[in-house]
Amino acid sequence: MDHNTLFAKTPPGRLFLIAALPGAIGMLASALYQLIDGVLVGQVLGEAAFAAINLAMPFVIINFALADLIGVGSAVPISVRLGQGDEKAANNIFTCACLMIVGTGALIGAVLFLSAPVLFQLLGAEEELTNLAVQYLRVYALFSPVSTIMFAVDNYLRICGKIRMSMWLNILMSILTAVLEFTLLVVLDWGIWAAALASSLGMVACVAIAMFPFALGKFQLRFCKPKFSLSMVKQIVACGSPNFLNNISGRVTSIIMNAVLLRVGGQNAVSIYGILMYVDGLIQPLMYGCCDSLQPAVSYNWGAGNKGRILAIEKYCFSAAAAISLLSAVVLFLFPDMITALFLSGMDEGFLATARMAIRLFAFTYVTRWFSFAAQSVMTALERAGEASLISISTALIFPVLLLAALSPLGLTGIWLNFAGSSLLAGVLAGVLLLRFWKRRWKTATAS
Image 1 (cartoon, rainbow, N blue to C red):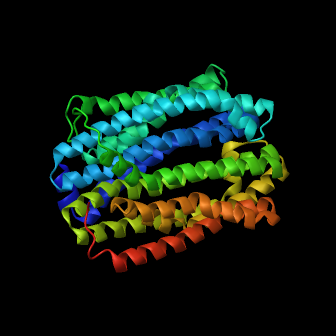
Image 2 (cartoon, rainbow, N blue to C red):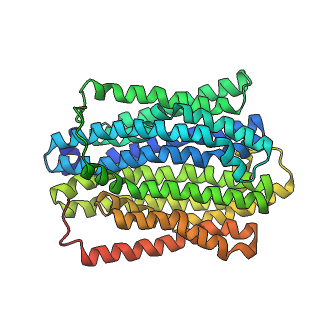
Image 3 (cartoon, rainbow, N blue to C red):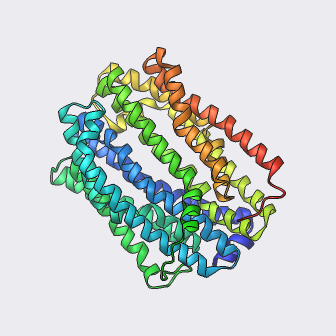
């Protein structure tokens, strides 16, 4: 199905089934490589290695966040240009964006490789924990120029209507990662660095598969002689800023949390926080897949001036995000011990009791998380980068840091309550911004 038929003519319900469900499955499969990484490291290498990858992961995600910024940031104007019938401009944005991803991947990878020891020492990690975390981070940094484009290719495949290919590619990446990591850690008995190597090799293989058809000119988007302009770069950065700020702010918050947890609760507290982040890393991609998969359709209809269709599409986006979020809250509250055992086995009762309380308090996050998540997505698709960025950075950084200080007298309990409180405040903020946009801008706003 060509992009015009898919985005402009397919009934919204069928469009959701065609785009959002495979998108959610694909994003879930993509997220599984991190979950597999955590489970295997925790079960095979032990708690110290598990704590080490949780110290390193925020920096890994920061690296990937730049590719995500460019991928999402370029996908919106590409879809808008296609909606306006300007394929030449769309292809130029696509080509320039790919080059930007490779360049930023090389630069940030080099910075992380060289600064890794200092970063973990500043967090207050002991020598063993620092050495393990450095090994893990440096492997990701070496592969950064190539592997990071995996976090943008989904957007380009969906724009070209290759939604199932995107889904199967993410599934393949998770399978490759699982097989490689099991082989390297369990069969060959290699160290923590091999976990990062398995993930990186899986991503590189899938990048090669994904980019081959683009290189041959077989898809809607084609490589061309790049023509960079300041206005184009600004637009990519503006449109990608909400997701980027969410990723970066979330990782900064994680770094702050890890530093506080090391002082308040030690290595055990960092491990429990890691479990929460792995769980969140499984739930959010499901919501992201539903909302992000529909973004090209929303942006396309925004460019075409079809606002009624946008509203019809977004009803499905908000409903799907709510269903996923609320179901996740129930599962987390009812099965905290099973979730803990998935990552770490043989822990004492004190650890299990703390983990049980943390997971149950964390479950309340998803009672309200869906609303701000879906609101940020629609604002991004409608080129309302300012509003989307405000929701993003407030959710991931401003509210958590404020509540970290406000709830500090409660100790670890205050930290576990932080997530639900931040989510509630983000929902209120998102509601205010959506209402203001509806009253002041919706009837007169047009695509730029």
